[in-house]
Amino acid sequence: MKSINRLVFILLTSSLLYILGGCNQPQNKTEGDLQPLKELIITNSKFDTVQARALRILSGFTAGTSYGEIWIRDFNTFINGSLKVHPQETVRDNLLKFLKIQGEDGNIVDGLIDTANANVGYDYRYSKLLPGLAAHKNTVETDQESSLLQAFGKYIKATGDKDVLSMTIEDKTVIRRLEDALLYILNDRWSDKYGLVTGATTIDWGDVQPESGWGVAINDKTKWAIDIYDNAMYSMAIDAFLEFCPSDYKSAKDWKSIREQLKQNVREHLWDEQAQKYIPHLYLDGSPFAADFDENKILYSGGSICAVLAGFNTPEEVAEINRQLVAAAHAENHATIGFTVSPPYPDETFPNMAAYRYQNGGDWTWFGGRMIGGLVHYGLFHEAYEELEPMVDRVLANNGFYEWYDVRTGEPKGSGEFRGEAGVLYDAINAMRD
Image (cartoon, helix red, strand yellow):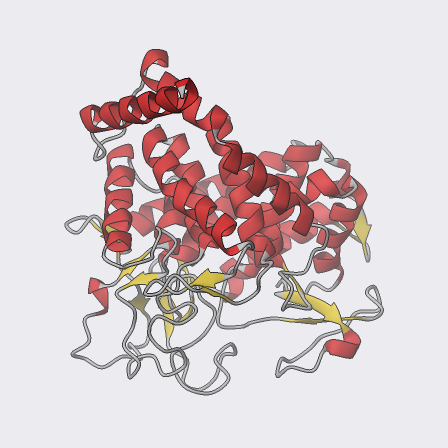
């Protein structure tokens, strides 16, 4: 009974402090202010359970039980957990695979799969350096190169293994190949007019075009656009490169200046100051949607979260972004801040993906969980805890790390052992404990 009363006291005290402190502005909490929250974190056994389960399913490197591929955009988000359960060399070798099949122009593939299972509609590529494996690239998205740079950054930060950068793959060092990946974006996926990264029109961080047909490949219907997700990911990739780049390495570009200019251009062209949110798209050759469809009313979650992580916003703006995400989540019956878009695109507007399905309004902890580290960074500790809890509870209630969830019913969807979600929650709980 005493322990129950103590927990009730902690909860009430924490809630009172939260109300008094306010949730709209970042707060500089004192040690005493945070003590009740610290107690909640320390005594939350659910965190231990979820992290232990996460490490168990990180026994492999494919995206999840329903996937045969190692995807770099997924691997980037569970690499910290992988390093807890695999030898350092195993994790490193899986990263290097993506450089062993790098394009001549520096581009990085999405996924690697056993040749025997390379039977989907992708245009596969092969390399003598990777016998038995086939690779494919989703050409409508522009996050593969950025994901690999970030993954290398996390690997080196966790292990201290900078020797990997001097390793040679076909007469070219790893550090040079990583810079080539950054250069590919500047050369092939860049708008000189806006000074920003480009890609095909997709839903937020999604990798499917709106037009019917094979939606993951550039075609004659593709509408080129600029969005916040691709640019935030590229900025974080440059940050990673600058952090691990050896001091004696002669870079091809002034990456620090490119990063700073990118941030300025994001603020000028993608940030809606009045609405305090990011616009969905800046179109380069016309929109794929009808003229009477007001796309700017849609709130993007994942791209906004990545912008926070990239440091594009002030502390006050981060608090407002978070407020809008929480409000949109509360408008649905079973949503967290991991919803992709609010509201979803109507069926007739996005034929390739129905409303409330998958990336068109589904709820993905894979992205929502990333916001926790951002909230912690900006001192929004109570918000971080309150927004993490329903994600953790959902894992326990459904006995699995599901790929996405239906915000109307709460029903789990997709792979039941989605390693991206497991990795993100593992990192989010560590962020709270740190």
